Image (cartoon, rainbow, N blue to C red):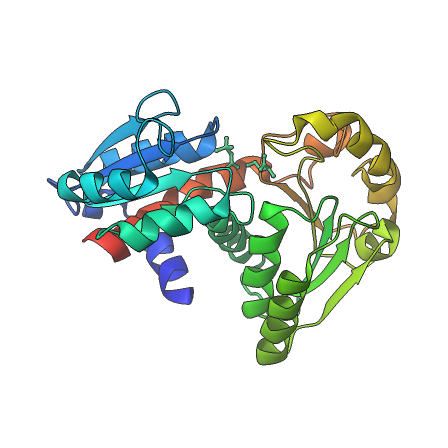
Length: 289
Ligand code: CP
Ligand code: NVA
């Protein structure tokens, strides 16, 4: 992971050096869900590397409906050098990867959002100049973004406090992986239902939406369950003065985070969004150059 982050630092500082690095290479973006950051940062990132991108939205190829996942994987492997896929079910990504002969990059599934996590740890290093000794509080829903973020952070030596409502915490598989990552780096992981305690000791406060794409039918139930897990002025009063606030975006302002916190001096959410592009360019270079 450090290799990708270091390459991303160079890509960010010396973009022109890589302007032909992926000349005549092409990727496809198979997106079953909407996207702003992931789509635009991959498309522009690939353009800046001299390559070509084709966007294949849900109405284009009908993966799994019009055509089987296997056939999509096998056919696109004959045209493209790589695929970024955003799916509902993580298993669809795994099936694509099973049958494709080209790299498959997870652009978000119901289980994971690894490109987001890479951009996030890159942003944390950019801000603090280190990982070891830092504490990250993830407050909110134990979702795809949390899964990838806490594993990346723990592997790099950042200690993590997860605070979610009961029944919305990390599942057993993620908890086991997180404990193993913490053991190997010497970081600490705690999982609780106490957002204030998590916030008090954090250098980084992180949240994400309470209702992820595909969960719209559960919105009312979730908004009620998460009401005490909002990043607002009250919780910021308990936090350290030098802490930063992060959110993968899109944010539901007024739900998981207030305008006052999103727009405060602590917020580095737009740095995060920008850095998605730099780290993804590094990923593309590692996989396709
Ligand atoms: N953070 C993120 O992945 O944003 P999009 O859903 O807009 O791509
Ligand atoms: N957890 C959110 C992240 C969006 C980038 C979702 O899956 O909708």
